Amino acid sequence: MKNAVHLLNDGVVALNSDTIAGLFIKYDSIQGMRELFKLKKRDKNKVFQVYISSFSMLKKLGIDKENINILKRSLPGRYTIIVKTKLDIPHITKDGYIGIRYIKNKEINSIINNIGPLAATSLNISGKGVKELDYYKKIFPFVHFGNLKKIKEGKPSSVIKCIGNGNFQLIRPGAGSLKKFCADIAIASDHGGYEMKEYIKSILLKMKLNYIDMGIFSEGSVDYPDYAQLVAKSIQKGEVKKGILICGTGIGMSIAANRYKNIRTALCHNEDYAKLARRHNNANIIALGGRFLPFKKLEKILKIFFTTSFEGGRHLKRIKKIEKV
Ligand code: RB5
Image 1 (cartoon, rainbow, N blue to C red):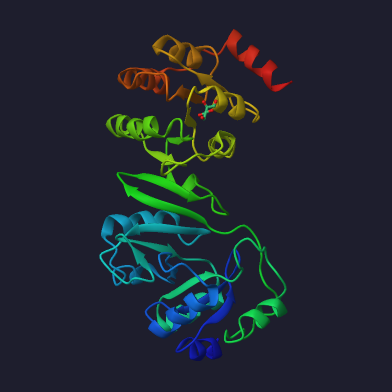
Image 2 (cartoon, rainbow, N blue to C red; image 1 turned 90 degrees about the vertical axis):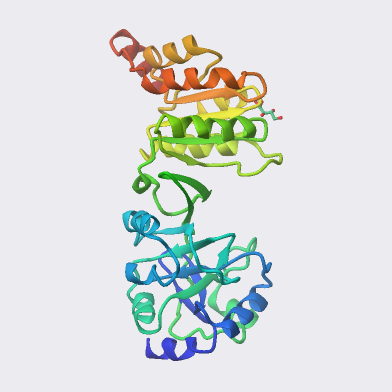
């Protein structure tokens, strides 16, 4: 450990994190930052994550009380949590946000206790998978590999952005469960439903329902099954209870999400559909047609969907039959 502390004073050190191996520098080291950008041939617009080893370090990183409390709810854990910061350090902050990691790892935490927060990025080269240690030693000749004997590989951290009012964006699904973020709803769309998704978020705010937005985050063509999967799996894992999926017609999202066990997605065109989808089908996802349903109908439809209870009884027997297929 002493060695790593010494080496971090002016260089880049490779260490295993709780998820995958990473390249670490002191968070405010200009020299380290330059080397890291060079080594990873990284786009200058992409920032590094900042590792802390205690919540008392967050104030120095420009994070306010509200966001510190959110971080306390979920960390330490397998997350990179992006929160607002008052700091402006180009290699670790972007548009007023900073990505924080706080993991359960004795080696890394004792280094941070000694020299303060670290900035890091993963060791692997994106798109190339994880390779043997010797490979990285060859391509990163100036990195200190210290005690590293075996490269850790696994799911990377879940990257979650705090967007205020208890709502979040899932920027990258990963190893950390979303349960700790206590959201009521997961919402996602493809390009055909993007505009409607953004509008629905203002309705959810009014209804005081917290959400995790699972994408998309900007216009541009994507495949709806990828987003149906994110929401369906999140419900299956018990991270959220219900979901909203929007594509052009709502049909693609319904077909895709209904392939997942215990997921009952209902394509709703009006309030009656929403009411019966809950009462009779115990639907846990509402699908909407972003290109067909007038936006002015949404508030009532969603209100009914999220406040109507399942009737059970004969309807329960029928739902059980679906799961036996
Ligand atoms: C995308 O153009 C469109 O096909 C999709 O949004 C959806 O309507 C599929 O069912």
